[in-house]
Length: 397
Image (cartoon, rainbow, N blue to C red; front, side, top):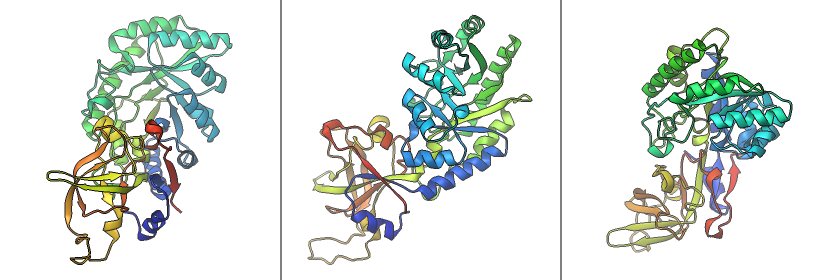
C-alpha cells in the first residue's frame, strides 16, 4: 500500500510512469538469498523480466548472477557489475554476433537449445581459439499448468532440445572439441504456483541426468530454470513469494550428487511486486451498460493484460486516500460508492483494455490510478506504438 506522502508526490508528476519501491525489492531479494543460501543453491536473475538500471544495480549488490537472453543483456549485465563467471546466456535464437560477444566476454555458460546451435558455438569458439562452456537445455515435457502462452516445457514448444534428440546431442558433443559440457538446463514456464509441478520436474531431471551419466558424461551443473509465480490478486498481503517452499522442493526431490551445483533463473519472483504503473484518468464515459475509465497509460506502457489476458490489481489512489464526503448537489457523488468500470487506455486498438468490470470508487478526471505488480514484464515490454512517448520511471525516496 502506497503512503499518503507518496501519493501526494505523485500528484506533482506527469503520468504515466513506473514507480519502483526499492525497499520492497531489497526485502524480496533478501528473502530469496536467505532461502537459497540454506541449500548452497546459485541464483541467476532473469534479466528479461526487468532491466531498469536502478533495479539491476540493487540485484547485483546481493551477489546474484545474471541469466541473459540477448547480446545486449549480456553487455548490460557486465556494465552493472555482474561477474562474467556468473553470467549465463540462454535463448532459442542466438545470432553469431551475440555468441561472439559472449565468447569475448568469457561468460560462465551458454544454455544451448538445439544440436545446430552446438555446432555453431563450437565453430565460432574454434575461430577464436577458445573453449565455450555449455549446458544443454532439454525440454522435459512437464506441464507447468499455467497460461499456454507462458508454458515452455512441452513437446509443442519451440524451446529446448526434445528427449528423442539426446542421442544427436551426444554425437555432437563428441565431435565438438571447442565445447566443454557443464550440465543440463530446464525451464518449463512462468507464473507457476503449484509446487507439485516442480516435484514432477525434479523427477525428470533425475532421470535425464542418469541418462547422461550412463553415457560417460559428468554433470557438474543442474540448472532447473525459474518460473516461480507471484500473487497478483493480493500484492500487499503476499508481497514476497514463498521462496522457502520453492527451494525446499528441489532440496527434497532433486538427486544432487557430491560436488554438483544447482542453479536457478528467477525473474518475475524477484521484481514483480516492487513496481506499479501510475496513470491518470483522462475521461470518464458513462453508458447504459458500460462505464469506462480512459487512462493516459495503455498497452504501450503495460501490454501483459492484452497479450496474456493477465490480471493486475487496479486501485484508485485519489479516492482511496480521500477523506472528503462529497455532498449531494456538488456535482460529485459520494466517493465511497462502488462502480464497475472497464479500465482502458488511449491506444487506437480495441484490445487496449487493462480489465473489464473493475470495482472502484466513483472516479473522476484527474484521479491517480495504480496498476499493481508491474515490475516484471512491464517497463521492458513498453513500445512507441502510436508514436507515444516512452514511459519513464521514478523511485522510492
